[in-house]
Length: 209
Image 1 (cartoon, one colour):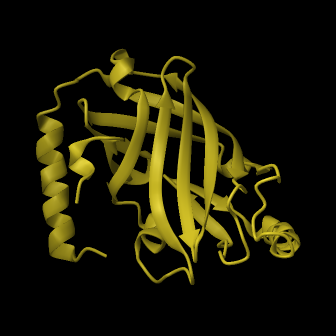
Image 2 (cartoon, one colour; image 1 turned 90 degrees about the horizontal axis):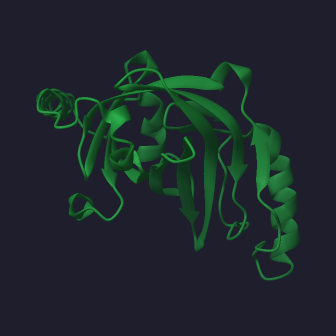
């Protein structure tokens, strides 16, 4: 996890970039918003446990992303978890409405725990934060374990099983997002509660180590 001085520097850089925003009205430039964005940094402390290595036994966060479909006005937030040769994705699906040249209102419809490569070698946390949304997974841990036990007798895979869908609690069903910087490769967004998200467009050289 970044130290205080590093976080201060990051915040200063974000502020400087926002001043130079080449797209002052992002919601009127929907083709730029469209596509898959990979989370590179967030000030949202709820995501720190996911981004810090070693906090979830046998689990590594491979990717946190947000996919925007500007034609259908939908948003999908996704966390990909991996552990000992298996992976699974936890996603939330939402629709959005344009409320201002920079702001969209997001309404979450459902969550999905992907099962194609889920095996008994991966541990699903009881709660997970997906770009600002707190998702309670504890009601599904027993079901996941049951499916895993069945799968372990076959080929330790449950690709034939459908994804596990769950509803979003009413306390987390809506949020808003303000885009303060946008170009072809970089997006900076601010959410409710002062959360800041820095995301790179999938395929951007900025994602290269």
